[in-house]
Length: 263
Image (tube, rainbow, N blue to C red; front, side):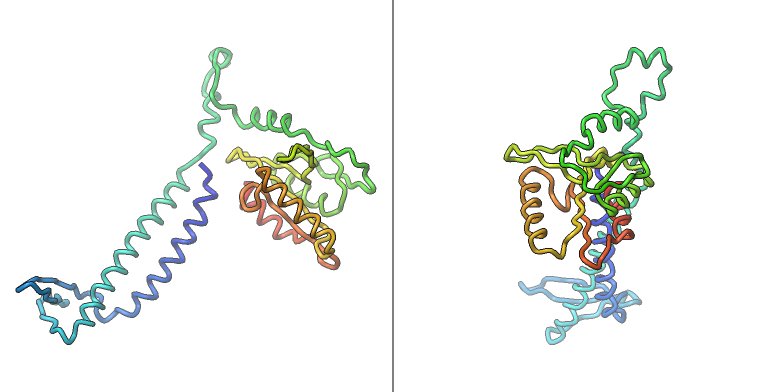
């Protein structure tokens, strides 16, 4: 279960609640009135109960008042349902812990653990296997410049160093320029491949350093199209960052993306 997917839904519900409250503000004077419908002689008759529970007839010429009452009732039911949905999602998010099942083996003694064939690996084992599966530094193109990262590797640009150091700072497993096979059989080397440990989901991060150059932009739009055909999709498992002439990497925005997708 990816809790991240629930958070936008929670925000959507909050927005809808604000809209409903705004609509209900137009019905304050009749908030405690309740519409009553009766049928006689094949026709509907409309009544309402006031704050003193008195039943009062609504004549046909005042049918618009009956419409207001039923509309107000509908908005109240919508609000009640949205509040229930909001509470359900908030409770689930607060109680759900995807890592619990991964760490069950730690409850066994060494003797029992030696006999166990677990369905799930703990995080440490999973990260190690992931790193071995996504080997870094596979791009054979020579470095024109190189920048050492805090983790001890090398990258090709200052902005890539900033990103790599942010990943290391937040404890996100990553590899630089790991090989990825495209849908057409060609190999490419995304800037970074990263692991969201909590969700056990692999992400890719591409940094576009010359976004203001038309040739560079055209080339990378083509790259994004190839990525999408190959399963690396912007908005799902692909994260991008940009800079251009006179506009440097937005570090604050990069950290927001890290918190949103990778933690």
